[in-house]
Image (tube, rainbow, N blue to C red):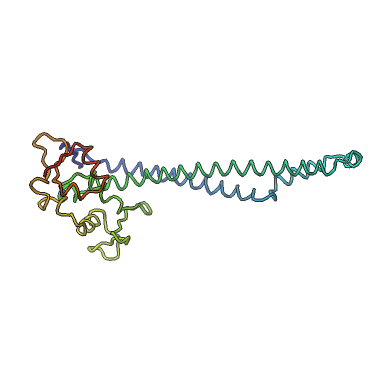
Length: 243
């Protein structure tokens, strides 16, 4: 269950999110296979030794009446024209495959970003730790700590400030789950007391909607502890500040 800033509770659609991620993974696989096939085809056009272009040039020369060409003194001219035609075909094919590879790469990157957003964003929105212990909403927590999480092999993996993977204390040798990893990261955050309930965030910095819903209220120290993105998200969500 995810609680919005206005207090409205909405069920987090885990099956729907998983289904979307599965579909996007399937599409990404199809595009990767298309990219690999395009790269294989492109390799055939390296240099001017391309089989199809060479075959075309040979057929062109084969169909020429060499006797008449000798008489006209244009053998070298025709050979040069045939070679240029073959080179132009190779260049055009290489350009077309290069454009196809670029489009495929861009599409893969966009789909990876979508999957990344669904997995990591969904983890923040559905976090029980954030719901129970944080004095700021999930979107602000994600704005501050989202860069510590990556998607690897379809799994959300957390990294500490030194760039090391965070492993579970409860399950030695295994990657920490989202809430355990987030708790570990926040424990080392110098301004943790400003963003957690029942800590330095109490009083002026604690959530204070006045019974009217809307944005959160943070004290100046808690607000200054946020990065620029989190500050903008706080103001944009209707949040206020106190001294």
